[in-house]
Image (cartoon, rainbow, N blue to C red; front, top):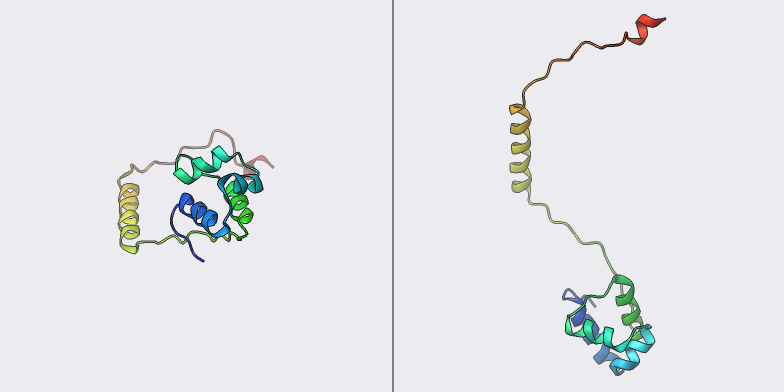
Length: 107
């Protein structure tokens, strides 16, 4: 099951499907009932560990996947052009003479 909405929706779904009361689900997840209630109302957001414990306490399993990052090639090209233009606009610096002799001269 893929859930793309917020944690409160996932927790509410777990609560409904488990048939448990808020107090029992919270007890099984090792949380105070007031905290579970705050998660359900969206007043607080659970961390990954708390969310996993709540889901597992309801008899489900939580699987996570890395977020896919969509790259807009046109935007990336514009940014690259801006960076290159900025680099070209920077004043060229001449190398200063070294204050110390090079290692070749020391032998």
